[in-house]
Length: 171
Ligand code: SF4
Image (cartoon, rainbow, N blue to C red; front, side):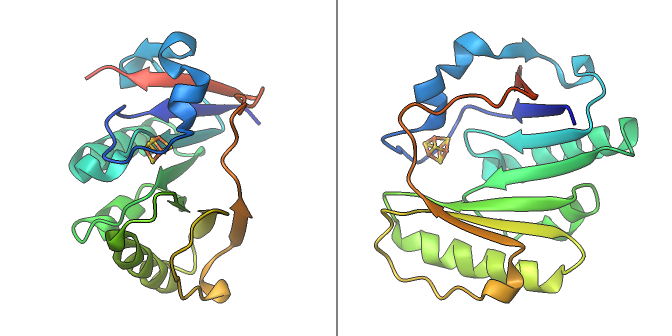
């Protein structure tokens, strides 16, 4: 299976110490391109930065990919939940990987609970939860709402998977 990992924006309001973008120096490793330049892949991963900083843009990107590559799967990676347009976004994507990072912010519990409730209402889509093992806040996790739950450390020497091509979208 070949995959396109698409950094939709490098903007992010968090400052994770081991941010994978910094660790991988993605600016030097990725192909900078327009969305229309990205070819056919079995799977598209929309990531950032934080994609949900601009959900309207993510809906446009997901809509384009779903129309151009209807047989491919599309997933979103995020640390946020948007109260607006999430149902619209779900028309074009197959699932969400939701991450809880360090530092654990007071707003994280709110975003997490909203995402978990949202996952509960969309049992036909894939929802995966990834939690940094150093998170020390309280989260009321309902395992039945998630397809996979991972608790792990962020890695200093993370590497790009070999079956993935990394892209950064130009504005
Ligand atoms: S949330 Fe992701 S993109 Fe943002 S600082 Fe943390 S690791 Fe980097």
